[in-house]
Length: 129
Ligand code: HEC
Image (tube, rainbow, N blue to C red; front, side, top):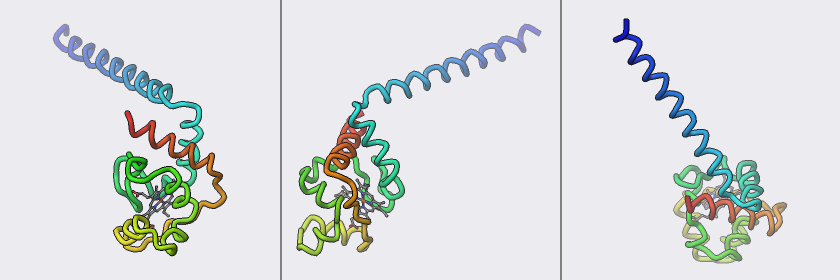
């Protein structure tokens, strides 16, 4: 009997430990995001997540480190209306558009600069982990 109970006991201990650890990790990652980034995360989840992830290409590019590829003014203008930038002959915008088989990213003119800044802050802070 002793030999059966021991492994079961060990398994229960292990399961409890793993659960505690993942809960701790979750609250830690929430805590590292600033207030602005949390607002950005909410906007990102609402408007962008259908096509973008941070780490992987989905419908659109992975957005991790996007601020190293473009400056903030460019990003705000592109996110508000990517087609306007493409039509104006912006080389970077045209190159991404062609790379993604001329898929049109919807425009987000109703998002304010501040809201887009918050999304960028979220991408930046979440990319740094
Ligand atoms: C319906 C799908 C879709 C949604 C929703 C969407 N995007 Fe995009 N996004 C794309 C595609 C496709 C591209 C590639 C460029 C193109 O085709 O115009 C892109 C490109 C980008 C780029 C350029 C990335 C790079 O690597 O240069 C940024 C930045 C971006 N999107 C941000 C956003 C943000 C922020 C939101 C939410 C507010 C958003 N996108 C919502 C489809 C989408």
